Length: 98
Image 1 (cartoon, rainbow, N blue to C red):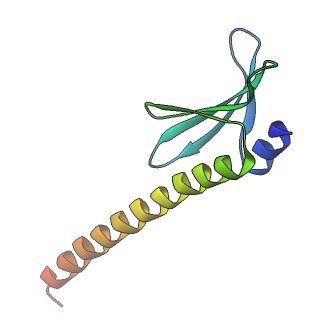
Image 2: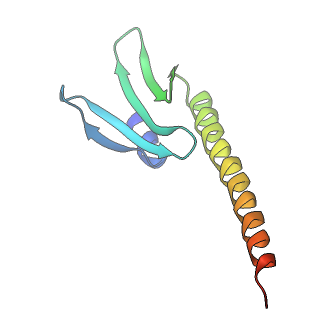
């Protein structure tokens, strides 16, 4: 179930050195986001490693909220960077003699 969910959310499967399948995506704010499927009887779910943070999810709603939070932080950071770039371009163009 979690495998299909991760594929729909733009994670792609990659085999690691142990032959285990790891799902990977990239976020501008977090860098690589890695998802490991946990299939043990007592602990069934997904372990997400993003940056220095490792979180376990056994509920789709909480996993969805977490992934949305990562996307929102990426958007706000990219909006901030675009504002700074626009201001620096404006300052440059004002210095040009027309």
